[in-house]
Image 1: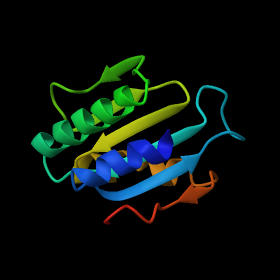
Image 2: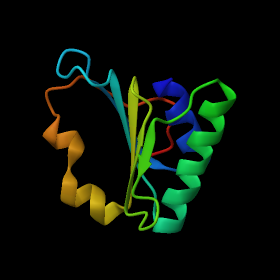
Image 3: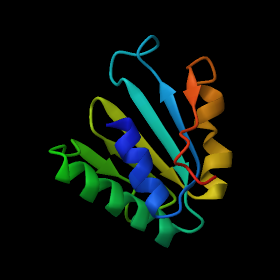
Image 4: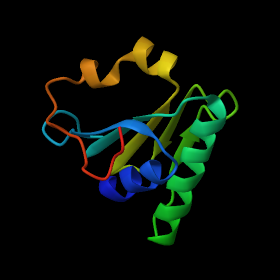
Amino acid sequence: MALAAAAAAAEKKARDIVLLDMRELVDYTDYMVICTGSTPRQTKAITEEVRKQLKAEGYSARRVEGEPEAEWILMDYVDIVVHVFTPESREFYRLDRLWNEAPQEVPELAAS
């Protein structure tokens, strides 16, 4: 599911896509997918593509937060959490650095 979300984000030209393996660190999710869109409009497009493709595979988000502002959109699918940031928000929150002890994978499909 995390790879499918990353692939969907890449289709909408998300940058700097990273998968964090959270299984040994937290009990609320298995993976985090973190990516960046250039503008709030692009973060919304990325979010819509992830939603569409995961729904086609039978997955629905438990909740989605941040869509109105679209600076940081969080999509909670329980097994994975997808974070779609604008560049400024990603730099400010630095989730990949906050969770630097988590094994990180940069999918080959991601055009960073």
